[in-house]
Length: 492
Ligand code: FRU
Image 1 (cartoon, protein in one colour):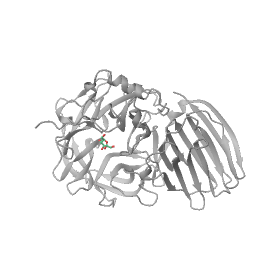
Image 2 (spheres, rainbow, N blue to C red; image 1 turned 90 degrees about the vertical axis):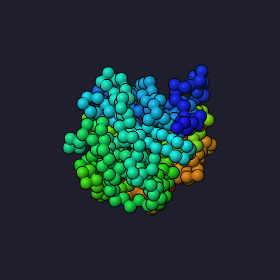
Image 3 (spheres, rainbow, N blue to C red; image 1 turned 120 degrees about the vertical axis):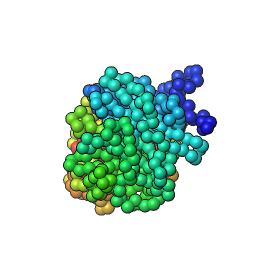
Image 4 (cartoon, helix red, strand yellow; image 1 turned 180 degrees about the vertical axis):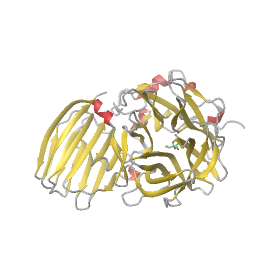
């Protein structure tokens, strides 16, 4: 059969003369390129893939379409680091040139097997604009860094009976001497599911069945993407990225959303007993996160700080999105918490602290930087409405607002010349138990703010595209408030 073709199904090996140079030029003067976040030089990135601490280094791969700020032929781009904060760009790790991955090397995860890094991914196959299939594939990284696609790829050809061509994003793990592969899938009745394969040698796979996950998600959920599984704080945790969830109260306001489920996995019986589940991040730009074990076996996570089908202001500069900062995960009170990874402290170059007091109104924290970390402690709260405005200028500002009466916290990103994504609303919010002390920790990097409240109880990951002069930080309150702040300028 002739290969289904569209101009966007072209690999980087087919770049035209000067095409890549010219793409680089289009964003050379961008105001919005992050400094310490993993981001593309050009083109569009999405999901983090194959994350690993392997052979003494951190390896981060991610979905990349080089030629435009759109979803096209996906490659696995690659950066590595010895300290989790200074990243070196590497040659593209996976270029989809084989028939079994004819329309892209889609997402997947990696696992160390016999001293090598096994990188699993989905070979995306398109027959027409609507029809597709999927193969599960393997590439192996040796200790010397060479990456080779497995000669007998695919390791799983096609999709099992009962599912559509939407089967993808392998997460492989080992339990009791056996390997399991978890995949996101769509049943033929167009509802989302997770399916499991098993293997004795991490290469030959057998279909085991569907994971019974009593999440009572509505039938509108038509696909579960990017499953992740691990244990932390003595609990089993499953993270999934469902498509088709409708907004519900403070939850699920993005086109696609992410849920973390806490409970107990019995992989032999194919059950995941659900204790609690929550939307993992309450921001606008957070999807397809993936976790991995760090240097000290702590559970780390990166996410795609972006959202599908939303136009971003950088599209016209021919680049889009970045990854989140690395976060450390733990379960506290039945909820998965995300905290900035300890390693990020290495980025601090200059720090200043001060007390603050507001009677009513606002105080300004001096700032001329586009890349900083801000720690705020607000206490003695008599105020009902208070918060902090970032990227502030006369006409712009990202507003983080606490409401004591309602016991909520919200982020509003409407007040920007380059406001975007309005079809899905400009405000995100969460319930929050507000007592006498509120702690806020924010990582700002040119066009992204990652806001951690009360040690990661609530997190908002949010892109914004401010004007050059919009750098102000204003703490505001409608009544008496005292507190202190520390601001760290960050390097890179
Ligand atoms: C999630 C996703 C994955 C897929 C990849 C393709 O954002 O749709 O399911 O593997 O992106 O880029």
